[in-house]
Image (cartoon, rainbow, N blue to C red; front, side, top):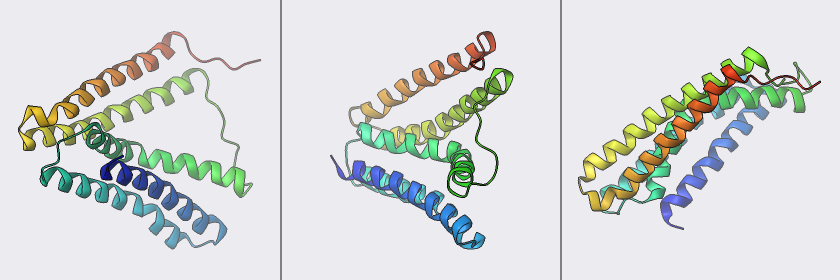
Length: 179
């Protein structure tokens, strides 16, 4: 595994460590300001990944799928970051602090809306990550060095279309509560 792959793994671990540290600090130690600081570290982690990836490519590395995954990670982190923190926050409150309502599964129209919101976040992630991929392709300006980036962008576009079709299918076949 190359250096960029390890950085992506470290950033993903760092993302969740920052979230857990923020939640523990906020709810266990009742220090909301320090908890917010830890939660605010998540975009800093994304920025670090962007800098390391750009530097690697600037120094002549041939773009690989790992570089493409770094761009995807950035897009997903920006688009889904706030909702992932909210998701973790709700579960931490309920399962650790034993406060608040139990996170409930959504059914019917509520599930459709939730799924479509997730798909629209995926579109935003694609626009952000795709922009990074296109910028890398443009700046490198050598198709032999950016083929992996182009291929990953095409694969991600296909996955996005499938995600949108699945979400749209819930309008026709909504999720029903099991009896």
